Every structure is written in structure tokens, then in C-alpha cells.
Amino acid sequence: MATALGLAACGDAGPSAKARLADITLKADDPSGIELSGLSAEWTSRFNHGDALFEHTFFESQGLGPVFIRSACSSCHADDARGPGAVRKMVMLDDQGAPLADQSGLQYGHTVRPQTVGATARGIEVPDNTDHLLVTVRVPPAVFGRGYMEAIADSEIQRVEAEQAQRTDGISGRINWVTYASEANPDVRFHAPKRGDMLIGRFGLKARVATLDDFTADAYQGDMGITSDLRPDELPNPIAPDDDMPGIDIPAETVNNVADYMRLLRIPTRKADAKQRARGAELFVRAKCDACHVPSMHTVADYPIPQLADIAAPVYTDLLLHDMGASYADGLNDYGASSSEWRTAPLLGLRHLRSYLHDGRAETIEEAIEQHAAPGSEAAASARAFAALDDASREELVKFVSGL
Image (cartoon, rainbow, N blue to C red; front, top):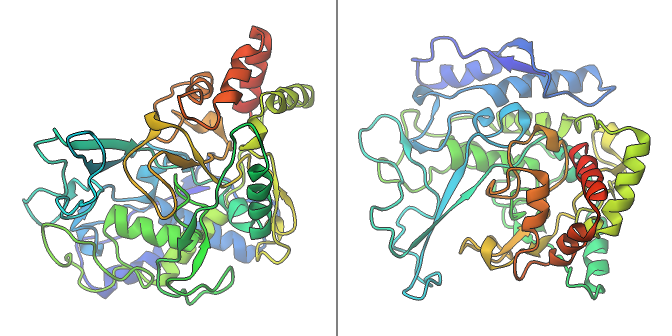
């Protein structure tokens, strides 16, 4: 609910610069990021400080880089929504246009990290010769309402997966079982996996991350080049083995505070009146949109944030992977997710979004629905059902989705 002041004396390096992360103060109200109602004073404090950290722009002296995409969490998730930052991915192709089994030609991985600090060398860029290279875009997802998604019981996700496996209409989502890729977190309030443990993926466009602390540590490391106690290693890059702040850049507490901020963000208030919601919900079901965009799933009873424990979380996603067809393929696998599989997007706060689908190819909600009819898409029948509605019903369904 607030934005942050920058750090004082940002030119200073070393532990003192790291320590001042704890001294960020709050500056002004931000109407787009609102905390859950009825929080205790302790949780409110965690939310406010995490909000400031989320807005904070890192500098070279604080461990930014040596290569990076953006320098603040809010640069990729403005107003806690998606974008304006975007991530470009690269895949090497053979003469037939299929991904090569050997991707070692991309020496520093599949992600473009074009910005650098402390050096004049190029960052990780798209190679000049792109004749045998597929370059795709991923728009970072929104972060509001993510505490609801983390709180959903594993058994609920498994139940929906089993139910879809019995369907005969082509819709059959899969759990993406992923590895907890961070070091063990000293904060075990929410969970206590060890590195390498297999968990149900929930976060990221292909559900490649299971928990919000792992998601946060991954973003610091991968997007900003900021190492932490959870992700202590610099990623391979063409410039230097480390940045201008050798060693670990931020403590686990900073990662956990930002993760708590996301956990504590409420779902934006929904705008439709009761009559419109009822009619829109009926059309939503008629078009089978609810098969994947499941309106709600139940949360665990012992989730540490009381407001999110033992409730029906209104997330409008099944958190499962679905094949969206060849036109969605990016040539990359994320754990169990294939090139053309994507996690069902949560339909939360859509009026705050600037574009739709994983790469922003759709400019309107109606266009996004129509794009679900792509050849090979599991959702093709739903898109056809939407197209078969009369004009007034299609407009009403779009208004319903827009108001979620």
C-alpha cells in the first residue's frame, strides 16, 4: 500500500549498504496494492516493509548484476500487476525448426539479460544470427492474491487433476511436480522443504515454482542478479564471477519479507453487481470456462495467515498445466511442462492488466478467449462455445470476466 524511498548514500558498498535495506521507509499511499482486511499489527508491519522492499530499486553497490533484466521487483510487476517488464527466451532450432537436443550454443542459458553494471561488455543478448533461433516473450504475472494460491491444499489440486482426467472433452490438466530449488529457508512458518524436495508447482507461467519464498529468491537471482541466503550463487554470465558486492547480497529475511508482502496482498475488489455476477457466472459455466479456471479451491486449515486459512479461495485457476497448441509453443520445457503447456492463468484483477495470455498477444479479454481456439488447444471447445453465444451473452460473459 506504499512506495519506498531509495537508500541513502547508495554509492557505499559492503555490509553497511546491505544493512540499510532494513531502514527503508514508506512514502505515499499506493491504491493498487492493498493488504488483507483485519491484519494484526505484526502482519501489517510485515506488509508495509515488504511493500517498500518490493518497490526498491537496487544499485551496483547493493549487488545488482553483473547482468540483469530489471533493477526492482515493481519494474516487472507495476502496481502489483503484470509488466511493463517482459522476459525474452531463446531456443536453438534445427533445420526443420525443432528445438535442438544440444542447447550448449546458448552458453549462458535461455534467458536474455541485456543490462549490465560495472562493465562495458554486452550482457546476455540475442545472438546476431537468429536464422536457427526461436525468440519468445513472457510477460511477468501479477502478484496480487498469490497468498490464496499458496494456501490451497495439495489435495485440492490433486482432486481437480483427477477429475479432469475423467473428462471426455479434451480438457485434462496436469500437475507440474517441481524441485524446491533454494537452500532450506530458516523461516519455517509456511513450509519447510529442503533443496531438491519435489513439490506441486503453482507460480510462474508454467508453474515451475512451488512456494512464494522460492519464487522471490528466484526472481532476485534471475532477474536482478541479486544473491541471497536462499540462492547464494551468481548465474553464469559473460562479465564476471561476481558483482561489486562480493558474496551474498541480501539476507533470507529480505526474501521472506517480500514473499510475505505478496502473501498479504488482497484480491482486488470485484466490480460487477450481484445480478451481473450471477448471469455472468452462468455463462462462464455454459462455455466450460470453469473447467480450467476453477472458481475456487479450498485452503489448508493451518495456513499461518488466518484470513487465508480454511477458506474457499476465489482464484479462478486449477494451477494445472494445459496444452495450448503449437502456436503457443516456445521450445522450452520447465520441469514437467512441455513447450506448448502453460499453467491456467488466475483470473484475478483483470482490469489492472494491460494485455492477456502469457506473452501479451491478446489486447482484449474477448481476443484472449478467441485465441484459446488455436489448433491443438485443450480449450478449443470452450472458445467455440463462447463464439456460439449471441452478441449480448458474449458481452455479458466478457463483463463478468473483466470484473473478477
